[in-house]
Length: 364
Ligand SMILES: NC(=O)c1ccc[n+]([C@@H]2O[C@H](COP(=O)([O-])OP(=O)(O)OC[C@H]3O[C@@H](n4cnc5c(N)ncnc54)[C@H](O)[C@@H]3O)[C@@H](O)[C@H]2O)c1
Ligand SMILES: O=C(O)C(=O)C[C@@H](O)[C@H](O)[C@H](O)COP(=O)(O)O
Ligand SMILES: [Zn+2]
Image (cartoon, rainbow, N blue to C red; front, side, top):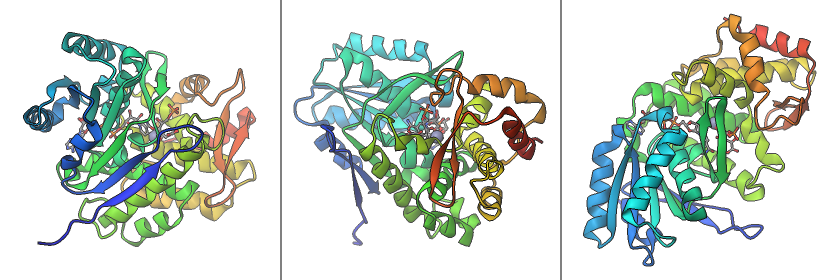
Protein backbone atom coordinates (compact mmCIF):
# COMPACT_ATOMS: atom_id res chain seq x y z
CA UNK A 1 0.00 0.00 0.00
CA UNK A 2 1.42 3.46 -0.91
CA UNK A 3 1.49 6.02 1.83
CA UNK A 4 -0.65 9.11 1.17
CA UNK A 5 1.27 12.40 1.28
CA UNK A 6 0.02 14.74 3.96
CA UNK A 7 1.09 18.37 4.20
CA UNK A 8 0.59 20.34 7.39
CA UNK A 9 0.74 24.15 7.31
CA UNK A 10 0.43 25.94 10.63
CA UNK A 11 -1.43 29.25 10.78
CA UNK A 12 -1.56 31.82 13.59
CA UNK A 13 -0.03 31.45 17.01
CA UNK A 14 1.15 35.07 17.15
CA UNK A 15 -0.25 37.98 19.18
CA UNK A 16 -2.25 35.72 21.46
CA UNK A 17 -4.01 33.84 18.64
CA UNK A 18 -4.45 30.06 18.80
CA UNK A 19 -2.43 28.29 16.13
CA UNK A 20 -4.21 25.82 13.89
CA UNK A 21 -3.21 23.49 11.10
CA UNK A 22 -4.28 23.32 7.47
CA UNK A 23 -3.93 19.71 6.33
CA UNK A 24 -3.67 18.96 2.61
CA UNK A 25 -3.95 15.38 1.40
CA UNK A 26 -6.50 12.66 0.84
CA UNK A 27 -8.94 10.81 3.07
CA UNK A 28 -8.58 13.42 5.76
CA UNK A 29 -11.98 13.02 7.38
CA UNK A 30 -10.47 10.59 9.87
CA UNK A 31 -8.79 13.68 11.35
CA UNK A 32 -12.12 15.29 12.19
CA UNK A 33 -12.89 13.74 15.62
CA UNK A 34 -9.47 14.74 16.98
CA UNK A 35 -10.14 18.32 15.88
CA UNK A 36 -13.65 18.32 17.31
CA UNK A 37 -12.25 17.18 20.62
CA UNK A 38 -13.70 15.33 23.56
CA UNK A 39 -15.41 18.27 25.20
CA UNK A 40 -17.98 18.60 22.44
CA UNK A 41 -21.23 16.74 22.65
CA UNK A 42 -23.01 18.22 19.62
CA UNK A 43 -21.69 18.82 16.12
CA UNK A 44 -23.53 20.74 13.41
CA UNK A 45 -22.43 19.95 9.86
CA UNK A 46 -23.27 22.91 7.59
CA UNK A 47 -23.16 21.96 3.91
CA UNK A 48 -24.56 23.25 0.60
CA UNK A 49 -27.34 21.49 -1.28
CA UNK A 50 -24.80 20.24 -3.85
CA UNK A 51 -23.03 18.26 -1.12
CA UNK A 52 -26.12 16.75 0.52
CA UNK A 53 -24.61 13.26 0.31
CA UNK A 54 -21.29 14.33 1.84
CA UNK A 55 -23.05 16.25 4.62
CA UNK A 56 -25.26 13.31 5.54
CA UNK A 57 -22.36 10.81 5.39
CA UNK A 58 -20.36 13.02 7.71
CA UNK A 59 -23.29 13.34 10.11
CA UNK A 60 -23.69 9.56 10.21
CA UNK A 61 -19.97 9.07 10.86
CA UNK A 62 -19.98 11.55 13.70
CA UNK A 63 -23.15 10.03 15.17
CA UNK A 64 -21.47 6.62 15.12
CA UNK A 65 -18.62 8.13 17.10
CA UNK A 66 -21.04 9.19 19.81
CA UNK A 67 -21.67 12.85 18.95
CA UNK A 68 -25.19 14.24 18.71
CA UNK A 69 -24.71 15.26 15.09
CA UNK A 70 -27.05 17.33 12.92
CA UNK A 71 -26.69 18.19 9.24
CA UNK A 72 -27.86 21.68 8.26
CA UNK A 73 -28.40 22.07 4.52
CA UNK A 74 -27.76 25.52 3.06
CA UNK A 75 -28.40 26.94 -0.42
CA UNK A 76 -25.56 26.62 -2.91
CA UNK A 77 -23.00 29.31 -3.49
CA UNK A 78 -23.65 32.99 -2.74
CA UNK A 79 -27.32 32.44 -1.92
CA UNK A 80 -26.18 31.03 1.40
CA UNK A 81 -24.34 34.19 2.47
CA UNK A 82 -27.39 36.09 3.74
CA UNK A 83 -28.77 37.26 7.09
CA UNK A 84 -31.79 34.99 6.50
CA UNK A 85 -29.63 31.88 6.13
CA UNK A 86 -27.60 32.89 9.20
CA UNK A 87 -30.88 33.20 11.15
CA UNK A 88 -31.95 29.76 9.88
CA UNK A 89 -28.67 28.30 11.18
CA UNK A 90 -29.03 30.04 14.57
CA UNK A 91 -32.49 28.51 14.84
CA UNK A 92 -31.13 25.03 14.08
CA UNK A 93 -28.41 25.47 16.72
CA UNK A 94 -30.90 26.76 19.26
CA UNK A 95 -33.22 23.81 18.67
CA UNK A 96 -30.29 21.41 19.10
CA UNK A 97 -29.35 23.01 22.43
CA UNK A 98 -25.92 23.93 21.04
CA UNK A 99 -23.57 25.10 23.83
CA UNK A 100 -20.19 26.82 23.97
CA UNK A 101 -18.31 23.53 23.94
CA UNK A 102 -20.09 22.25 20.83
CA UNK A 103 -18.60 22.46 17.34
CA UNK A 104 -19.63 23.61 13.85
CA UNK A 105 -18.17 21.94 10.77
CA UNK A 106 -18.47 23.83 7.47
CA UNK A 107 -18.15 21.50 4.47
CA UNK A 108 -18.25 23.12 1.05
CA UNK A 109 -16.89 25.94 -1.05
CA UNK A 110 -15.88 29.40 0.12
CA UNK A 111 -19.47 30.57 0.40
CA UNK A 112 -20.27 27.71 2.81
CA UNK A 113 -17.17 28.16 4.96
CA UNK A 114 -17.79 31.95 5.07
CA UNK A 115 -21.34 31.52 6.43
CA UNK A 116 -20.42 28.55 8.66
CA UNK A 117 -17.58 30.57 10.18
CA UNK A 118 -19.88 33.55 10.61
CA UNK A 119 -22.50 31.45 12.39
CA UNK A 120 -19.73 30.04 14.60
CA UNK A 121 -18.46 33.56 15.34
CA UNK A 122 -21.88 34.83 16.36
CA UNK A 123 -23.52 31.86 18.12
CA UNK A 124 -23.08 32.42 21.88
CA UNK A 125 -20.49 35.06 20.81
CA UNK A 126 -18.19 32.43 19.40
CA UNK A 127 -17.92 28.65 19.24
CA UNK A 128 -15.25 26.37 17.82
CA UNK A 129 -15.48 25.57 14.11
CA UNK A 130 -13.67 23.44 11.57
CA UNK A 131 -13.45 24.14 7.84
CA UNK A 132 -13.59 21.32 5.31
CA UNK A 133 -13.18 23.19 1.99
CA UNK A 134 -14.27 21.27 -1.09
CA UNK A 135 -13.35 23.77 -3.83
CA UNK A 136 -9.96 25.00 -5.01
CA UNK A 137 -10.87 28.51 -3.92
CA UNK A 138 -12.00 27.33 -0.50
CA UNK A 139 -8.77 25.41 0.06
CA UNK A 140 -6.32 28.08 -1.05
CA UNK A 141 -8.10 31.10 0.37
CA UNK A 142 -11.57 31.18 1.94
CA UNK A 143 -11.16 28.49 4.60
CA UNK A 144 -7.82 29.84 5.80
CA UNK A 145 -7.40 33.01 7.84
CA UNK A 146 -10.61 33.42 9.79
CA UNK A 147 -12.40 36.04 7.67
CA UNK A 148 -16.04 35.03 7.95
CA UNK A 149 -19.09 36.86 6.69
CA UNK A 150 -22.24 37.44 4.71
CA UNK A 151 -23.42 39.89 2.06
CA UNK A 152 -26.06 42.62 2.42
CA UNK A 153 -28.15 44.34 -0.26
CA UNK A 154 -25.50 47.08 -0.36
CA UNK A 155 -22.57 44.82 -1.07
CA UNK A 156 -20.34 41.84 -0.61
CA UNK A 157 -19.08 40.63 2.79
CA UNK A 158 -20.25 43.79 4.51
CA UNK A 159 -21.11 41.96 7.74
CA UNK A 160 -18.71 39.55 9.35
CA UNK A 161 -16.11 38.77 11.96
CA UNK A 162 -12.56 37.54 12.28
CA UNK A 163 -13.00 34.10 13.79
CA UNK A 164 -10.29 31.58 12.85
CA UNK A 165 -11.18 27.90 12.59
CA UNK A 166 -9.69 25.24 14.87
CA UNK A 167 -8.46 23.37 11.83
CA UNK A 168 -8.79 23.12 8.05
CA UNK A 169 -9.00 19.81 6.17
CA UNK A 170 -8.28 20.07 2.44
CA UNK A 171 -9.12 16.68 0.98
CA UNK A 172 -7.93 16.86 -2.62
CA UNK A 173 -10.29 14.03 -3.59
CA UNK A 174 -13.22 16.45 -3.11
CA UNK A 175 -12.06 18.40 -6.17
CA UNK A 176 -12.89 15.49 -8.50
CA UNK A 177 -16.60 16.34 -8.46
CA UNK A 178 -16.14 20.07 -9.02
CA UNK A 179 -17.28 21.43 -12.40
CA UNK A 180 -14.61 23.05 -14.59
CA UNK A 181 -16.11 26.53 -14.21
CA UNK A 182 -15.85 26.35 -10.42
CA UNK A 183 -12.45 24.71 -10.55
CA UNK A 184 -11.04 27.44 -12.80
CA UNK A 185 -12.57 30.18 -10.67
CA UNK A 186 -10.31 29.02 -7.83
CA UNK A 187 -7.27 29.48 -10.06
CA UNK A 188 -7.81 33.25 -9.88
CA UNK A 189 -6.92 33.27 -6.16
CA UNK A 190 -3.94 30.97 -6.86
CA UNK A 191 -2.72 33.39 -9.54
CA UNK A 192 -3.34 36.27 -7.12
CA UNK A 193 -1.01 34.58 -4.62
CA UNK A 194 1.52 34.31 -7.44
CA UNK A 195 1.43 38.02 -8.28
CA UNK A 196 1.44 39.35 -4.73
CA UNK A 197 3.93 36.96 -3.13
CA UNK A 198 5.11 33.78 -4.90
CA UNK A 199 5.95 34.14 -8.63
CA UNK A 200 6.88 30.43 -8.85
CA UNK A 201 3.11 29.88 -8.91
CA UNK A 202 2.91 31.90 -12.13
CA UNK A 203 5.75 29.91 -13.70
CA UNK A 204 4.00 26.63 -12.85
CA UNK A 205 0.67 27.77 -14.30
CA UNK A 206 2.29 29.17 -17.44
CA UNK A 207 4.26 25.96 -18.01
CA UNK A 208 1.04 24.02 -18.56
CA UNK A 209 -2.17 26.07 -18.27
CA UNK A 210 -4.34 23.16 -19.43
CA UNK A 211 -3.01 20.97 -16.60
CA UNK A 212 -3.61 23.77 -14.10
CA UNK A 213 -7.32 23.54 -15.00
CA UNK A 214 -7.69 19.99 -13.68
CA UNK A 215 -7.37 18.22 -10.33
CA UNK A 216 -5.06 15.70 -12.02
CA UNK A 217 -2.54 18.34 -13.18
CA UNK A 218 1.13 17.63 -12.47
CA UNK A 219 1.39 20.68 -10.23
CA UNK A 220 -2.07 20.69 -8.66
CA UNK A 221 -0.97 19.87 -5.11
CA UNK A 222 2.01 22.20 -5.32
CA UNK A 223 -0.11 25.10 -6.58
CA UNK A 224 -2.60 24.58 -3.78
CA UNK A 225 0.04 24.25 -1.09
CA UNK A 226 2.07 27.26 -2.26
CA UNK A 227 -1.06 29.41 -2.25
CA UNK A 228 -2.04 28.24 1.23
CA UNK A 229 1.47 29.10 2.45
CA UNK A 230 1.16 32.62 1.05
CA UNK A 231 -2.15 33.13 2.83
CA UNK A 232 -0.99 31.45 6.05
CA UNK A 233 2.09 33.64 6.27
CA UNK A 234 0.15 36.87 5.77
CA UNK A 235 -2.72 36.13 8.16
CA UNK A 236 -0.36 34.85 10.84
CA UNK A 237 1.32 38.25 10.70
CA UNK A 238 -1.85 40.36 10.44
CA UNK A 239 -5.05 38.53 11.34
CA UNK A 240 -7.28 41.61 11.62
CA UNK A 241 -6.14 43.39 8.47
CA UNK A 242 -4.45 46.34 10.10
CA UNK A 243 -1.65 46.21 7.55
CA UNK A 244 -0.37 43.77 4.99
CA UNK A 245 -3.45 41.52 5.02
CA UNK A 246 -4.93 44.16 2.71
CA UNK A 247 -2.59 42.81 0.01
CA UNK A 248 -4.74 39.65 -0.14
CA UNK A 249 -7.44 41.96 -1.47
CA UNK A 250 -5.54 42.46 -4.74
CA UNK A 251 -8.14 42.76 -7.53
CA UNK A 252 -11.04 42.61 -5.08
CA UNK A 253 -12.16 46.25 -5.03
CA UNK A 254 -13.54 46.02 -8.54
CA UNK A 255 -14.30 42.27 -8.23
CA UNK A 256 -16.79 42.72 -5.41
CA UNK A 257 -18.53 45.50 -7.36
CA UNK A 258 -18.81 43.22 -10.41
CA UNK A 259 -20.22 40.38 -8.28
CA UNK A 260 -22.89 42.65 -6.82
CA UNK A 261 -23.68 44.12 -10.24
CA UNK A 262 -24.14 40.59 -11.59
CA UNK A 263 -26.37 39.66 -8.62
CA UNK A 264 -23.75 37.06 -7.71
CA UNK A 265 -24.26 35.09 -10.91
CA UNK A 266 -20.55 35.50 -11.58
CA UNK A 267 -18.23 33.35 -9.50
CA UNK A 268 -15.95 35.23 -7.12
CA UNK A 269 -12.80 34.01 -8.87
CA UNK A 270 -14.01 35.16 -12.29
CA UNK A 271 -14.65 38.65 -10.91
CA UNK A 272 -11.26 38.66 -9.16
CA UNK A 273 -9.65 37.82 -12.49
CA UNK A 274 -11.07 40.97 -14.15
CA UNK A 275 -10.33 42.92 -10.95
CA UNK A 276 -6.66 41.95 -11.09
CA UNK A 277 -6.29 43.07 -14.71
CA UNK A 278 -7.88 46.39 -13.67
CA UNK A 279 -5.53 46.71 -10.66
CA UNK A 280 -2.53 45.89 -12.84
CA UNK A 281 -3.53 48.60 -15.32
CA UNK A 282 -4.05 51.04 -12.47
CA UNK A 283 -0.56 50.25 -11.18
CA UNK A 284 0.87 50.76 -14.65
CA UNK A 285 -1.00 54.07 -15.18
CA UNK A 286 0.11 55.27 -11.74
CA UNK A 287 3.70 54.70 -12.84
CA UNK A 288 4.34 51.91 -10.35
CA UNK A 289 4.19 48.77 -12.49
CA UNK A 290 6.23 47.86 -15.55
CA UNK A 291 4.46 46.99 -18.82
CA UNK A 292 5.62 43.36 -18.93
CA UNK A 293 4.23 42.49 -15.48
CA UNK A 294 0.97 44.30 -16.20
CA UNK A 295 0.59 42.42 -19.51
CA UNK A 296 1.43 39.12 -17.83
CA UNK A 297 -1.83 39.37 -15.86
CA UNK A 298 -3.96 39.21 -18.99
CA UNK A 299 -1.87 36.44 -20.53
CA UNK A 300 -1.83 34.04 -17.60
CA UNK A 301 -5.48 34.58 -16.65
CA UNK A 302 -6.66 34.11 -20.24
CA UNK A 303 -4.47 31.02 -20.60
CA UNK A 304 -6.46 29.21 -17.90
CA UNK A 305 -9.79 30.44 -19.28
CA UNK A 306 -10.59 33.25 -16.84
CA UNK A 307 -12.32 36.46 -18.02
CA UNK A 308 -10.28 39.66 -18.38
CA UNK A 309 -12.96 42.11 -19.55
CA UNK A 310 -16.33 43.36 -18.28
CA UNK A 311 -19.28 45.30 -19.75
CA UNK A 312 -18.05 48.83 -20.44
CA UNK A 313 -21.37 50.58 -19.80
CA UNK A 314 -21.48 49.68 -16.09
CA UNK A 315 -18.68 51.92 -14.81
CA UNK A 316 -20.77 54.51 -12.85
CA UNK A 317 -22.49 51.71 -10.91
CA UNK A 318 -19.22 49.90 -10.24
CA UNK A 319 -17.59 53.11 -9.02
CA UNK A 320 -20.47 53.73 -6.65
CA UNK A 321 -20.27 50.23 -5.17
CA UNK A 322 -16.50 50.43 -4.78
CA UNK A 323 -17.00 53.32 -2.35
CA UNK A 324 -18.27 50.90 0.32
CA UNK A 325 -15.26 48.60 -0.08
CA UNK A 326 -13.74 47.83 3.33
CA UNK A 327 -10.45 49.41 2.34
CA UNK A 328 -12.12 52.81 1.82
CA UNK A 329 -11.56 55.45 4.48
CA UNK A 330 -14.18 58.18 4.45
CA UNK A 331 -14.34 59.44 0.88
CA UNK A 332 -10.94 57.98 -0.01
CA UNK A 333 -10.89 54.95 -2.29
CA UNK A 334 -7.86 52.71 -1.74
CA UNK A 335 -6.58 50.03 -4.14
CA UNK A 336 -3.94 47.35 -3.89
CA UNK A 337 -1.53 47.66 -6.81
CA UNK A 338 1.85 46.15 -7.62
CA UNK A 339 5.21 47.89 -7.80
CA UNK A 340 6.62 44.76 -9.40
CA UNK A 341 6.23 40.99 -9.00
CA UNK A 342 5.56 40.14 -5.34
CA UNK A 343 5.72 43.83 -4.41
CA UNK A 344 2.17 44.88 -3.46
CA UNK A 345 1.41 48.36 -2.16
CA UNK A 346 -1.57 50.61 -1.46
CA UNK A 347 -2.63 53.30 -3.93
CA UNK A 348 -4.56 55.99 -2.05
CA UNK A 349 -7.26 58.15 -3.69
CA UNK A 350 -6.24 57.72 -7.31
CA UNK A 351 -7.30 60.49 -9.63
CA UNK A 352 -10.72 59.71 -11.22
CA UNK A 353 -9.08 60.04 -14.66
CA UNK A 354 -6.65 57.25 -13.74
CA UNK A 355 -9.51 55.00 -12.67
CA UNK A 356 -11.33 55.70 -15.91
CA UNK A 357 -8.21 54.96 -17.96
CA UNK A 358 -7.70 51.64 -16.12
CA UNK A 359 -11.36 50.84 -16.67
CA UNK A 360 -11.00 51.47 -20.42
CA UNK A 361 -8.44 48.64 -20.49
CA UNK A 362 -10.95 46.08 -19.20
CA UNK A 363 -14.10 47.43 -20.85
CA UNK A 364 -15.68 45.01 -23.30
N1 LIG B 1 -13.12 34.26 3.84
C1 LIG B 1 -12.20 34.46 2.94
O1 LIG B 1 -11.05 34.79 3.25
C2 LIG B 1 -12.53 34.27 1.49
C3 LIG B 1 -11.50 34.22 0.56
C4 LIG B 1 -11.84 34.03 -0.78
C5 LIG B 1 -13.16 33.89 -1.15
N2 LIG B 1 -14.12 33.92 -0.21
C6 LIG B 1 -15.53 33.71 -0.58
O2 LIG B 1 -15.65 32.41 -1.13
C7 LIG B 1 -16.80 32.37 -1.98
C8 LIG B 1 -16.49 31.65 -3.27
O3 LIG B 1 -16.13 30.34 -2.97
P1 LIG B 1 -16.10 29.20 -4.08
O4 LIG B 1 -15.44 29.69 -5.29
O5 LIG B 1 -15.59 27.99 -3.40
O6 LIG B 1 -17.61 29.05 -4.50
P2 LIG B 1 -18.92 28.43 -3.77
O7 LIG B 1 -18.72 28.17 -2.35
O8 LIG B 1 -20.00 29.34 -4.19
O9 LIG B 1 -19.04 27.02 -4.50
C9 LIG B 1 -19.33 26.97 -5.87
C10 LIG B 1 -20.38 25.87 -6.17
O10 LIG B 1 -19.77 24.59 -6.06
C11 LIG B 1 -20.54 23.74 -5.20
N3 LIG B 1 -19.56 22.81 -4.64
C12 LIG B 1 -18.72 23.01 -3.60
N4 LIG B 1 -17.88 21.98 -3.48
C13 LIG B 1 -18.18 21.10 -4.46
C14 LIG B 1 -17.65 19.85 -4.86
N5 LIG B 1 -16.58 19.32 -4.25
N6 LIG B 1 -18.21 19.22 -5.90
C15 LIG B 1 -19.27 19.77 -6.57
N7 LIG B 1 -19.81 20.96 -6.23
C16 LIG B 1 -19.27 21.62 -5.20
C17 LIG B 1 -21.20 24.70 -4.25
O11 LIG B 1 -22.33 24.16 -3.65
C18 LIG B 1 -21.54 25.86 -5.20
O12 LIG B 1 -22.72 25.61 -5.90
C19 LIG B 1 -17.22 33.81 -2.19
O13 LIG B 1 -18.35 34.09 -1.40
C20 LIG B 1 -16.03 34.61 -1.68
O14 LIG B 1 -16.39 35.87 -1.21
C21 LIG B 1 -13.84 34.12 1.10
O1 LIG C 1 -8.32 36.96 3.45
C1 LIG C 1 -8.32 38.12 3.03
O2 LIG C 1 -8.00 39.06 3.75
C2 LIG C 1 -8.71 38.41 1.64
O3 LIG C 1 -8.85 39.56 1.29
C3 LIG C 1 -8.91 37.25 0.74
C4 LIG C 1 -9.92 37.48 -0.38
O4 LIG C 1 -9.56 36.59 -1.41
C5 LIG C 1 -11.34 37.17 0.01
O5 LIG C 1 -12.16 37.23 -1.12
C6 LIG C 1 -11.94 37.94 1.15
O6 LIG C 1 -13.17 37.40 1.53
C7 LIG C 1 -12.20 39.39 0.81
O7 LIG C 1 -12.43 40.04 1.98
P1 LIG C 1 -13.15 41.44 2.11
O8 LIG C 1 -12.70 41.90 3.44
O9 LIG C 1 -12.70 42.31 0.99
O10 LIG C 1 -14.60 41.20 2.05
ZN1 LIG D 1 -11.13 36.51 -2.86
